[in-house]
Amino acid sequence: MPADYLDRLAAFVVDTRLEDLEVSTVTAAKSVVLDTIGAILAGSRLEENAKLANLVGEKGRSGGSTLMGHAGKAQPMMAALSNATAGVSLEVDEGTRLGGGHPSIHVTPAAIAVGEERGSTGKQVLESIIAAYEVTSRIGGATRARHDIHSHGTWGTIGSAVATARLMGFDAAGIRQTINLAASMSPANTWAPCFDGATVRNLYPGRANLQGILAANLSQCGFTGIDDGPADLYSSVLGDGFDPEQAVAGLGEPGEYRIQQNYFKMHACCWYNHPVLDAVQDLLRRERFQGSEVDRISVEAPPMAATMTNPHPANMLAAKFSIPYAVATAVLHGDTGVEAFYPQRIADPKISALAEKVEVKADDRMDLRRYDYPTARVTVTLTDGRSLKQEVTAHRGDSRNPVTQEELQGKFLALSGESLGEERAGRVIELVSNLENLENIKELTGLLGNA
Image 1 (cartoon, rainbow, N blue to C red):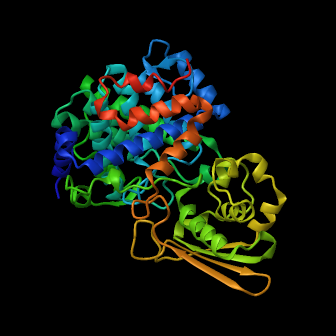
Image 2: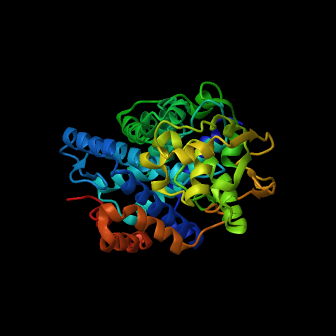
């Protein structure tokens, strides 16, 4: 297929209007926005993210975009850099099985920052998020990424660029040009920092947001990209293949919007852990065994899991990418939230000892984009000889195994409480639920800083 798939994507972005969408799509989008804001506010409390917010605030004093969880404002590019970095730091931001990544953290920070500077309505910001989420998820889903390339930051740059271009009022030709520019500005990132616990990895979405906003502005300056930027980069340097037909299959069809086919994280760690942890928690509820009774634990998971086997992670980030650690802390403490990966928990010798009993095996048939085959299989062998088994296909929080709106709001309150307090957090929930009716997005962002 020639690059006219880009014309179709660009036209889709321009034509996206809330009044043309199903209520379920709009409701799902608002849930995604709330979840992303919660992830940003929680991550903003980490020391390095607070220092980053201070840095970008000092460098961009004339800006008008909120640094969520902090005092002061910055230029949209720098605010989005800071907010998106914070939002991925605790591994609680949403994602999609269909696109192989986390679209909202690459889209929502840019949309909110640019929308705030421009005085956009809530409806305009929400439309830009829905359209950009769709495009970046579809580009990601059409890419057969190389095994060593981390999805964070890659096609997400296109997402932030599309959100920005939509808010800036670009026509379809301008959207297409921006997509091509953004593709050529994609960061090239590997998985290695995740396993080493190198927090430069948390900057991947931040850099993508910055680069995406920059790409839209460069397009307005007259810079040009090649005719088919995604296929050029994602079929060679960052991927082993790119299927343009897949990028537009079912585009715009009711019920097919990617933002309503996502998953929300109910465990504060890498997505590949989630089916495994669901299986472990199911067994704990059913069998009520103790960590002291465990002889060994066998985990079967997708091939990517074979790289997540270090039982002794160096720090919080590395622990979020360790299946043995996550399983061990779940068994011993019954907790897989943010605090389960704090340094004091990682230093627990009982967790370390149990993690050594966890064996991870790859099942080549398992794929987190599939729903017709299990995505995790856990077998717990106890010291009395009993063998306990559990499989999971759609993990809890996935669109095919959803949590309730009350649970999502509870997650937001837990994540945002330290930054906002209960009363202000409740007000944010109200405003996001009414986002399409806000006359100015500043009604929302005015609650998200720390003046």
